[in-house]
Image (cartoon, rainbow, N blue to C red; front, side):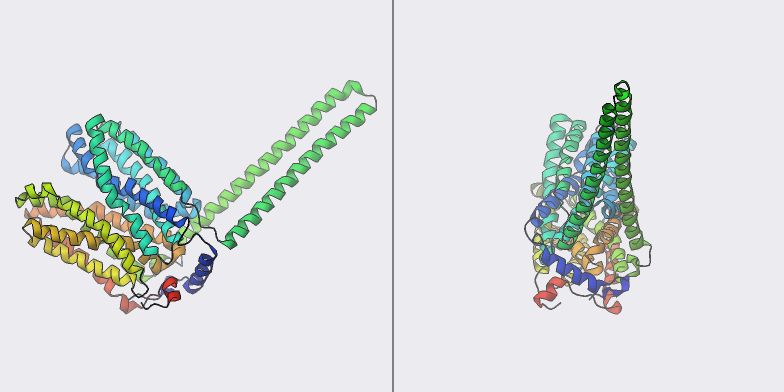
Length: 514
């Protein structure tokens, strides 16, 4: 159902062959350290996405503390969730320049600082800066590398690996909700945020586990560069020693001539000359490192700029542009039920049953299973990840239209279970994105996708609330959001008119049919 990759302007056939050769040369791909990357990404999803889904606990504390309107206070959580995703394209620049490991470690520190500074908040507007912006940007700097690294380390079982790592969101929703409730009850919300900031420092450990994938060719180049630099440093040190030794020889010659009264003066001069030479060598080393860093930044910026605005822009790929348009409506359809279901249950008089087993918990639990099962199905050699992705989308939009028609707890529970399972397609988004643009451009491309999801998460729930204010019913909120989601899906259905995508290298090797 995909089109060929030639629309983007890259030579994808050569890229696929090179990638296949490099993957075969690295034993850590699809095994070994790759599972440590999955563990790292799993923990990142717990600490970031899980914490954001548990912000309702802190939102209640902020309402009591600052006595502001619900709409204004809710923007704190919305900013944090939205900015985490919206900054994706800009985080791609850091990844291209510094790599995933350094970007994630810096993001972990920034996230922890945002949580800790928020514990000293005196008003809601202060939280907009410290928690919404600071912690949001830091979370984005960790989240995108966590997704990209899983794609780097897996080829044959990429969908399963992404599914396992993203299940951390569901586990985190439970764990972080319990943790934040306990901390708020025992220590107050300010100390709870301070402690949570300390917990977020574990993101730096997760980032440290994101070891870059070094292939044989790259390792040889790096070792060659290391040998050159070592030999250069050795030559510099030898020249410095020669200068120093020459100074000593000159000093001995002058002492032999019987000029003992001037020996101290010449010794001081030679020591100053040697010190000056060492300073010059140190300055040359510093200049070399600065020049290398400048070249790295320029190269990363050129790659980032060309992906968005250059001749080889990702947006020249019409398939990818349609995928971005779909992402603008996708995430809000998953978030809106979490926000409106408690109020809907209250209106239907089902609060007692919902308190025993909340409908949102049903969505979260089945969502975890959906990610793993859909990942396993997509990794089958005779199944296309794109077909599984589209089937899950159709199921989700169907559930959104049917949900307002259910007025019993059993009916709502069944629909919520289907919503949770079908929304497991989120684990397939990196896989589909990589099939569209290739592993080389995954960081930039997926950054754009999650940016579109962030806009959806930021604007979708307020839009649904505005529809409720006009109609005094939640039904129309689901119907309108479902229609907008259907428009996004229709843009993906025009893929046959654009062409067909090339199957992944792993499935080509296995001889499966797409």
